Length: 288
Image (tube, rainbow, N blue to C red; front, side):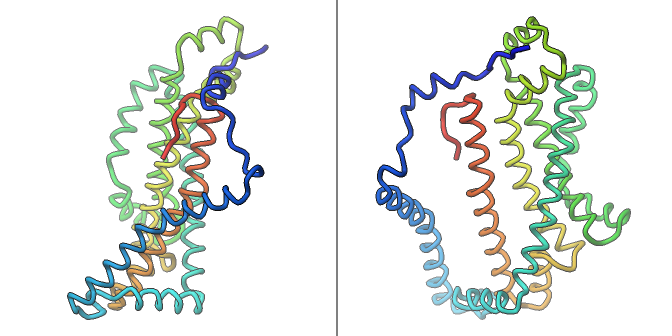
């Protein structure tokens, strides 16, 4: 059976025109990339300058308000000793497994709720209920049930990544035009074909947007869970630095968290979301 495309890419291509070729002007492309990098770094340079000036004007101790130079030296020491790379590796592995587990469970659940009005009416209110309960509230119970360690952290990340993807899957399927679903049924599509050729592709941009939100929530959950239930990782380092009054290490850990998330979002999640939207042609504008 042939399934009719639900998106229609041709109008989008003619409206936006052909994409400029990078190979036609390598120098121009490189200059554009450099300008983009400078635009990204400029606000951070201003922030560091304001930080330095404020530290000089306030005259507080390094324990209360360390200067940027001290924090950057701390970065170097942590890298040289292998502490920061080891903690980054531990944190990213936990985050990755938790997000993958949450997303892998969420998409089938979202599909099931979308395909059955009865299931939707019974369980979707529960999705909203548990989505409002932050993962940190569960960690004491998780520790009681599973003890301190890897399982608690991955479970808390999976928990917080699960619900946005479920909600996005249900919303994405609900936005597919009814006429498309009816036409596919008229052509004799089975339920499996309906799901594989119409529902999942049609909802994919919404699903990927939910994955991006869930991944961000999971990253935040990672740090909080490591502060409570881990003996390694960036969250653990930040918590221990506070206990040992090493404020510069606390700030170095905070900066590392921000850098990691910027890289994940900029080089993986945002291109995935943009590519999905372009592939299926459901939205013509660019995402942020």
